Amino acid sequence: MAWDTARTRTLLLDAATEQFAQKGLAGTRVDAVARDAGVNKERIYQYFGNKEGLFDAVLLRALECFLMAVPLEGNGIAAVGEFAGCLFDEYTARPQLPRLLAWEGLERGDREGVTDPRAGACAENAALIRAACPQLSGPEATQLLLSIVTLATGWWALPQLGEIMSGDGVDARRAAVVAQASAMAAGPGQ
Image (cartoon, rainbow, N blue to C red; front, side):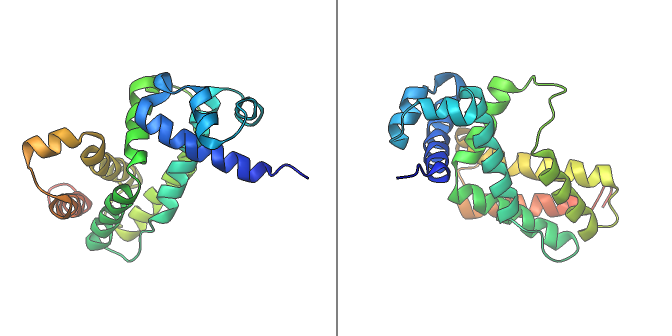
């Protein structure tokens, strides 16, 4: 019987996503990922090289799925606001992603000069924002995308602050993200 490589990779990525979201890169153990996936840990080394390679693969898959799952449709400020709301909704459905991004920033934020394969998906989304709001320059659209992702991530990566500062529920938080993204999309001085 042939080994199902794709299925094994998926099992490992799914198990690693949960482990890394809970414990970060430093706190996650390869044995625990393998155990949760029901796979021999040697497959991790075979497919990903090491724990850091597995973390990179988890981040790449998570961000690509995340950005591809949330299309920017329509034109204008309202379209950008709704895009931000949809990103927030995606975090609601998959709260592991903001935690993964937070862990990445804490544990690997100093990787200057490293080429990141996620950059292409981010550039595509920035171009969509620019197309929806032609009053924005390319750099402004890129900064707006970063601000939207940061804004939505903050609610999930720092839930204690959301509770302390506002106490609002998920619906109110989503509305705030949409309103703030819309205001940013209007451009400076609007």
